[in-house]
Length: 134
Image (cartoon, rainbow, N blue to C red; front, side, top):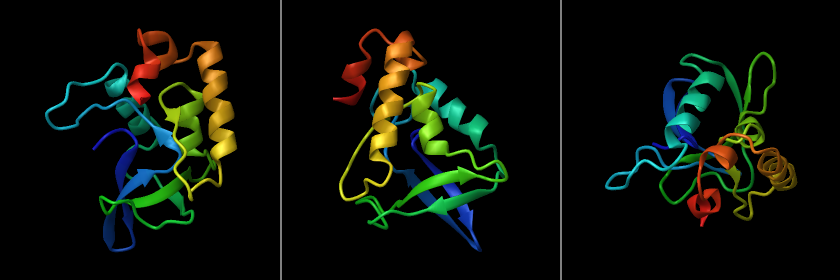
């Protein structure tokens, strides 16, 4: 798993979830090196959602991606933090728009631009951050 997907318990089942609207540097892709800021992005997601954290799962148009992961936006309970957006706003992820799941695309795009201009996270730490997402 990378830092844009995780496992969430829904009722009596556990689902592998892919966070919609974001792209993070790879940290555990088989046969691939760890990308710049990949471990930091994974650690940040674990900080935002420690084991046992309660979340609200919000879907968009498509239910699953080609790998069978549930596509979702996550909001942390009880404070309502929009986890997907926080990852982008804090510089741990870039925005990734894949139609038809575009409900928050403009918010992600704006947050990524602000993080880049402010030199947050990977935008400061990585020598060629745009190459991570091409």
